[in-house]
Image (cartoon, rainbow, N blue to C red):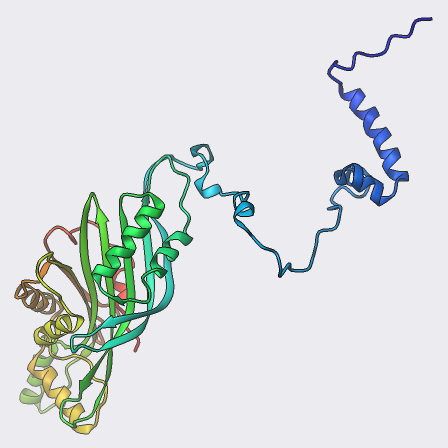
Length: 367
């Protein structure tokens, strides 16, 4: 009798697979764990009731002595630098992608030749071409840390920006550093002094092959309503009625683009401009004579929010180191349950038909 065996090259069908699975399960059910592992650990999952078993057991102790050497690192997956086929959503350019609010101590130089080390929040972004999946975020931090021990200036920021532009192979980039800058100020009459803290941000922008240096400063002051002042005086004079005008804590966010060849614009210079424009800055150390002086200072400088924007504008226009600028003022009314706001821009850098819906809410300083 002639026996013809099945052609081994013939593609197995479902029936063949079921028979093979049954044989494999019978063998695995009688074999030891070691025998199963030696053949293929995945076979354990074929046994009834062990479909989710991760056999063999994975190591649970952290390997302190493991060395991730260069050859090992070369095997690690890198999805962010994967092919464009991995892109999800529209294959469009992203104008800014990166990291926000990583913090480290940074040294800054002051106008009086002193150095300050301040906790600084850094935001770094780059543009991403439409055909690229993503960027390695940590490269921005690594590039920045190369320069973190230097006394920071816009020149140092440019060096950091150039490094991560090169590392990430991008064309446009933005680097922003935010911190609270202390300045010692004297009280109005008592001779006391204390530190006033100013929210400052340095921004370096590269766009379409051009670089722009920008400084942002929040200046906090008291605004006394001129209308309320006059009405209060009318009540005193016409009816002998004691009345007080309403005044409130107010904030101006001053954003200036520095001229390329205008020289150094110190933070203290920008603060001085604000003080000359609106001298009713909130106070740090106050005794009774200072409080009385502050009331007199406010009465001598009543101001609407429109006045504030124009006065700050006038001060900035007087400085040749200042290019384009924006003034955003918010008077957080004690009379109304809403705020009075104004925005004044000069030049194209800050001109925009749309505003961030949360812009004015970020100007609230709670002390």
